[in-house]
Length: 297
Ligand SMILES: [Zn+2]
Image 1 (tube, rainbow, N blue to C red):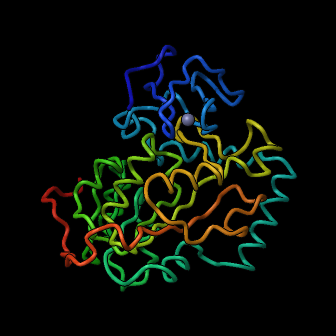
Image 2 (spheres, rainbow, N blue to C red):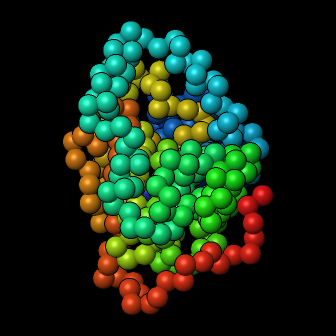
């Protein structure tokens, strides 16, 4: 899927992660920057970074905790209309939902083991109801260690790895719910990560996804200054259409994706989907244990 460094010498080279088309002869998007090449697939319209860093590079050089301070600096320089939209968004959040990921977890997830894929330092785990046993996967060593202390205290654990590899540590049909909050835009192999997530979910188990919405108004207005562009941290740029397609293609049923979940003034969108009940070993008892002996580092 990921080949060696591309002609710019940066990152790797990959085909469209959605449909597999080789877009190397296609036009670079105007949003390409500093050798990081963004392409819009000529077949399926998926927008993606063509030369993402390899997982190993991500782990060392581009770990989120090292790049996040640049984002804070950029926020200080934002335009007045961006600030106005942010105020509208804050008002809407206050009006509608307080802590949306926790509200969705409580609404959809059955009690039991749940997994936060791309769990960062365990911030979501720490806010979860104690009836849930939190597990996590995190590529950054530093953040995985932080999250491990939260998970361990509640009987779960955190694997320090990329998502497709990390998910192989768990039994099929193990989790009652999975979370991908601010994860899927970082994942170079999104369909593999989604397929693997489906495998470890129990039939009827839910997946909550939060990603930046490339189709939002701010991206159209702000262009290359849109806060959703992060080079090279963000490797996939999702729209409501491509997100729906990826989930359908990987065998999920969409449960919740209403206008408030993908409001055009919001930079992010939320979606809840489910592993269908009729497709897997539903009658098999699920052993409520993690299977790998390897420990998070
Ligand atoms: Zn494509």
